Length: 325
Image (cartoon, rainbow, N blue to C red; front, side, top):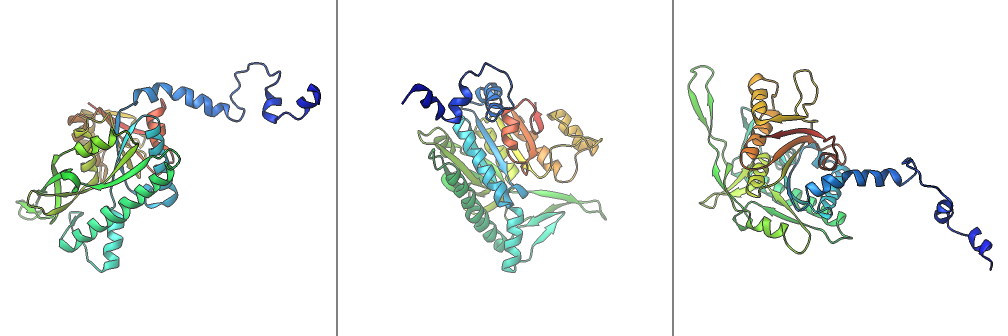
């Protein structure tokens, strides 16, 4: 066989390379991906061996395809040297299960009252169905590299100790402030991050996935707002970022445009002025608390958009509203 004959059957990959001069055109297949990876290098180095707490919930959690993409992105973060810690919610799923079980929900000022029957369902849904589904998706996405999800709740290893929530409201008629009893709804009073830290820095690649359930000093189980858990845990872990995946692009200004960055002072101003309203108010309040608790910055972003976390962490553009001191 002559050399000429050998060249004639060379692979398309080899034939394309022979005699090809150096070009900067990145439109060829593969080159655009390589360019994106090269541009991400400074950001990959910025987050190398840093902890990122991710609050995962909303419609992004309820749609199977998007949930699988989320799990794959979490695995990618781990492979790039980031330490992701996932805290998930599950309000809509709890409501659906309560309806199915025939348990009637009571609300006060839009807040669910968690009685004993509701608490039992909430723990079953959060610590059971939702938590294990996310862990399973992570295990599937990380199977080749043996990245493993670890499902936990705040009850494990005394991770989250809670105190019963104390809320008040002003009676519209008498103008007297009244105490509101929301039942088994708690606030974190103590975070013991030892177990999470052990998983983060283990020789094996683990991704903790935490359900927002905690226990009081007397042993009573409480449901906790997932945003609050994520913020408290991010502070205890000294996280570099906390990502709050929601159903909106971020904080919108009075003109309807996305606000790319805010200080905590500006965030408080947005709440006071009414620019932030509805469900965005508690998210901003939790973001402020997390930053004041030691987190470098919190980002509120749309978790329904595929790869939103990657765009936020590894590009110059970002993907939502960043809140910092």
